[in-house]
Amino acid sequence: MKKNIGNTEKVIRITAGIILIGISIFIPFTSTWFRLVTAAIGGIFFGTGLFSYCPLWKALGLNTSREQQT
Image 1 (cartoon, rainbow, N blue to C red):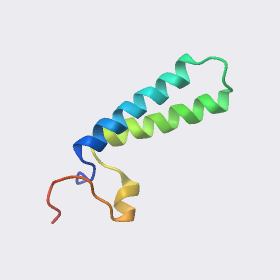
Image 2 (tube, rainbow, N blue to C red):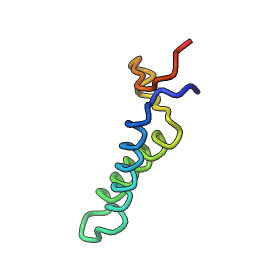
Image 3 (spheres, one colour):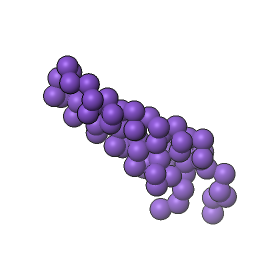
Image 4 (cartoon, helix red, strand yellow):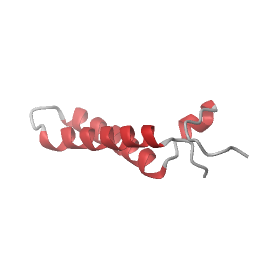
């Protein structure tokens, strides 16, 4: 699994993931489905940022990492 996410995108994804997970936990007046979907999307953002790899970017042939592709 090669890195395909650059540092700037990594920081943005991790931050967005933490915010979305926080919203799903700390905003009680929303519906259960909204909270689950928000937590799932936040988890995906956090995970892809943490590992610097996005399967969707790979499928689309995108790479924002500065590492050379071989």
